[in-house]
Length: 164
Image (tube, rainbow, N blue to C red; front, side, top):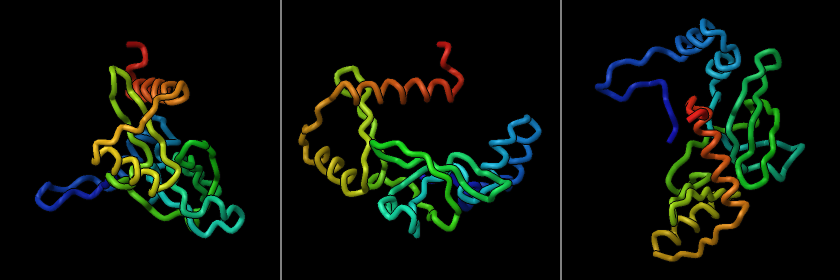
């Protein structure tokens, strides 16, 4: 749920994060190198202490870019309303995904992929509880289908399989 550069006991040692950043630099991928050098790079975080936008405090986001020159992080806020922000690391607290706090849930139903996005941990928990109770309150809207299709397309592109 939260990737780590540290190996589990008995699994040997992984190279330090700087090694991966160095490889990214050697390959000419400066943005990835910067992201890997940041402690929160690529991580899911919770927004904290943001006095200029108290409506976002407690919301989750994913750190997509480290702006090394400014020592700031570009984040994408999770949920139905997509918003990108530039924040200080002081405004972020690491919050890895868990089964009860997943941020989104991908369901395969009737031959279709459905991506459910949640605006809060409580909304996610209610959805998971309804699945455990055998309730089927989900209705698939055209917007849900479009989001799922875009998520699948984005994933294929990220994996380099977009021409398949």
